[in-house]
Length: 79
Image (cartoon, rainbow, N blue to C red; front, side, top):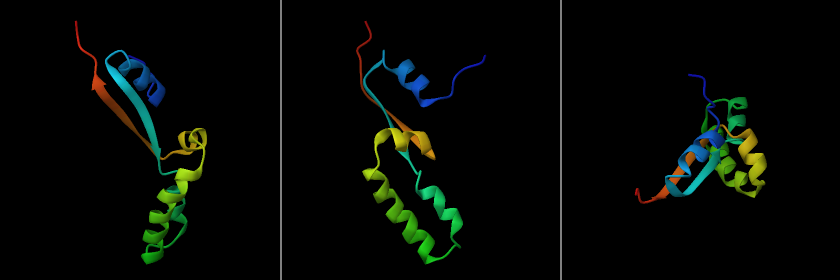
């Protein structure tokens, strides 16, 4: 069947079963590492990129993210 693979779809599908559902975007600045040759500067850039991403607003991170980690915590009791 056709289905939506967006993080919003999975968050809304999981919300009836978990108290806390969230999406953590990762890697939108880190994507630029492909512009550099593979050497020690490339590795250093990637380390710094993950730190720099924290200062950007969430909507920017989410839109440009390379990947998103979905977090589901505190399962609700099934009655």
